[in-house]
Length: 451
Length: 117
Image 1 (cartoon, rainbow over the protein chains, first blue to last red):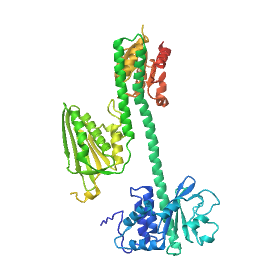
Image 2 (cartoon, rainbow over the protein chains, first blue to last red; image 1 turned 180 degrees about the vertical axis):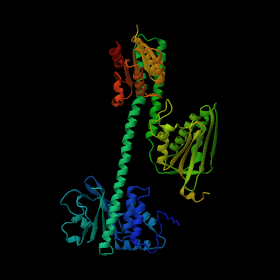
Image 3 (cartoon, one colour; image 1 turned 90 degrees about the vertical axis):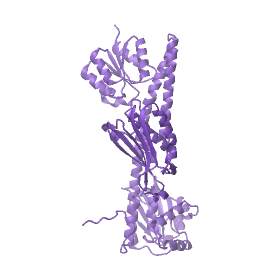
């Protein structure tokens, strides 16, 4: 017998302990495609929300250089506020998603006075003798402070700020380095922090540290890729610009030579002009490629978006025996970061398809809803297909099968689709044709109506 | 007797420029737009010097050099490319000179003169 369970549990059995639920939420948050801050907010919410550990408030510091910088402070500012929040939280049907959403809106609102105060804080990490909440990076210790007002080891200003006599400091560790610190207290309920709370908080601290560490590594990889791409780009630009420049320079020199005849002079000027046009085209494509940015997503009508693209494509195939068949589902709307760029990307794919079929063949453009979440813009051709040898390189910048290709077309397509949170699928058989499927997310509120 | 130079360059206008300028400098110039055409011509005719680009459609200049070496070891080769970075590729050391493309052809002409007079 086989039983299957969802790895990402959303409901727990009645016997499941609060701790188990808390850890599940934190572990699952690592798989959410949110930002680092958003995911840390989930962890902090789990530490402070009703069915979690039940600390009243949680303060987050993250490492910047050699200091810990205050990021946010979650929890009620007063007893009255606490009572009203906790009343809402105990309403049936209010779960973690709602609480996290509440906290998220709180952090960005003007009313968040706690966070405003914390943002001003900064403490050194590496000094041997420093006052709590500053951490000694080599110590790897949690610190429970009791009777803070009478404890000389605690920074006075911090005692004033936190207003609680008892609080727990948890370092967030990477492999060796301190990546941040969480400070927890029960300032509202005045419940003592007991051994069990400390044990659980330590696990949360380890998980949060590990999460920040992974996120930082990921960012480093992305940065390194960017640097590598810049290097490649610089080298590519050198070559692309140098050839026309050498040509322009050489023929200009001939113009200055008194022995050059009138006819040749005219020819040279024409060559120079065409090379200058080429330079302009190269710069245009490069700037287009570099300008893609992630904007906030907007819902776009696919048919509307592809109107202009269709017109320019029809002009391109005029006079050739190419059948262009277009079918776009009416009312299909997708979420895009920039419709102009996406339209341009679809045109790039169509251009490739037309190049691939040559003088005779068939190109299909389809747009339809694939399922509740995804819509597809598909371009299929009956052309020569993608050679096996470059299949896994086609999205790399500056790889081209065309003699005069810049190798930016598909790199551009991928960059645009990625920026929109979409994906690309390709099927290709040499000699038989290629199908490109660009997947984009549909509008959430329209998802329910999908058949 | 004029010395014969084979230019391997895929850019049409650039090719025309080299052909004219080197002819003016007193050489007999033949051009090939890619490595395979160049190898073809090498098998049929004798040349005193080869000037080759590196990035070209089809075989690149480095592959071309390897094949020329197998065919005829004694022909001097000048690499003429837009890239500095191929100097790190040790196969380019097999060439007799490495000239980075420039709007002035003086360096290229000087290297040719140095190698074949």
